[in-house]
Amino acid sequence: MHYFIEKPDYALVLFFDSVFDAGLNEAVKWDVYWTPMRYLLIHKLAILFDEPLLRESWRLCIEKRIENYKDDIVRLLTEVKRRAESSDLDARSKEIIVDALNYGIAKPLELDFGHPDRKMVSPNAVGFQFVVSCIARRVRKKNRKKASSIIVDRQHQFNNAQIGTHYYQARLAEGLKKAPHKEKNYYLKHPLFATLEEAEIVNKGLPDRELTISKSADSIGLQIVDVYLWIANKIISRQELPNELGYLWSIFGRRSSIDGISVEGMERRFMEFEKLLPRFEDLTNEQKQLAESLVEKHREKVRSLT
Image (cartoon, rainbow, N blue to C red; front, side, top):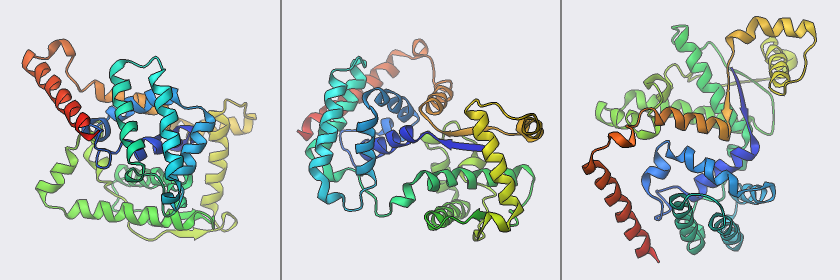
């Protein structure tokens, strides 16, 4: 399995999480954030950002003392709002985005900008979550109870973040395993996980043993991984491989797959979710009226915030 992170798209995701968290931003309707509808909105937000704006957003998302940058947050949100209002987005999308931004402009420090440890949100740490989940998937596929060991390349800048990431994933998996049926079922049926299997949601097979940090020079496994990643990156970049390496890729490439964080990937996830939804023409009048009433109720809430 080869995982990648498109850094501009990841910065956009951090902006979305910082501004559109329905638990913090009272102007955001819960389903915008807590269902795969988030992927659709992130896709629409992408047209509002260029590289300078993404860089500024990234800076504020990882700033340790965010309370000192209140005015910077307001400037960022004001510019995104200006772009949204002048964009060709549909009226409802504009309304959702502008409502969230207006709340943030009025109460910037109530949003989720800033982070106490920027390494924990680094692409390396986030990418490592994919790796650990993939190990769990491999354990399940081989019908094993656990992995014998997990060896990680020594990177002084990111090893602590990787250790922390693995620790919290393991604790979450253990907590779900021991949770009462009612609480566990409530979590499993969450709309955000609509397209995932139960084993994937609870990370069944996730190794709970501590990571082993090693130099590549001391581990043949890490050396093999380095070769694999180098070849995979060449393939993704559509660069030609020497015949010898092309043959090597043919051996393990057919059993590999590629996934990661990208706007295109989120679009595919939303399309999978959309297949589970009833067609608009199949909805009853009562269902349509209920949906309209819920939207109008939320509009009343947003108006009351100003």
